Image 1 (cartoon, rainbow, N blue to C red):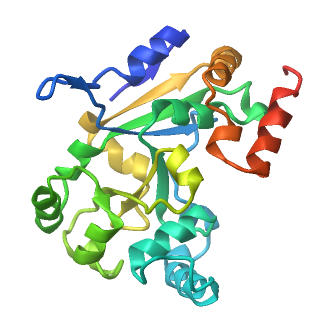
Image 2 (cartoon, one colour):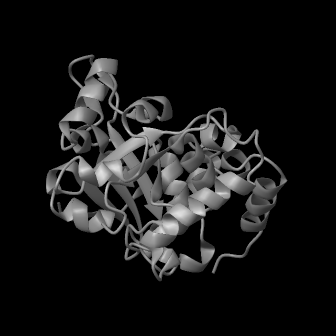
Length: 261
């Protein structure tokens, strides 16, 4: 898939909703997961990868100690996928990656860093339905039985009890998407969900390059960022909404009153 470089707000809307029409139900229902980054050259690396060193070996220690020291009421169920969701949500390095169903939320994250306004941004769009057609048979059947296109933590807990089971399902790496529990308003307002690679060393953009029919990469030119940011603010897609509370409010006000660079 080639990069799509847009030149206006209207072009961006067309690119984001390009394949949203579902003729089976005659509704606009996109099957894309969106992820916005302030720099188009940023790789799709997990926070676990960015930790560096022997990060594969450190993964189990991070999760074990998070579970040990976290408050006992942090998760509703004592399962791997509940704990990983909470850990990712609170900043622990994991092999999970954040996505959103909302193209506008992804746009926000591509535009939120004012220090990157001299750099092209990007919105990745990955078709989770097509990605899941590449899953091992066991996981595909679990989705089919539920009539679902994306896993829940409950569904995954029934199929995968340990991260070590993922690479044992097939000889080739695969990715899957799942929805976390509604831990707080931030998860809900961001329309958030996660992806995970079966192999913690597999970088997602390199894996996607092997499957060019399931994704597109929409480039936001640096010279267009201010216009898009102002229009997104007018649409009320801001830190105040996406990060409810005083921290989000402060971030929104700081950006609103920052001079144009």
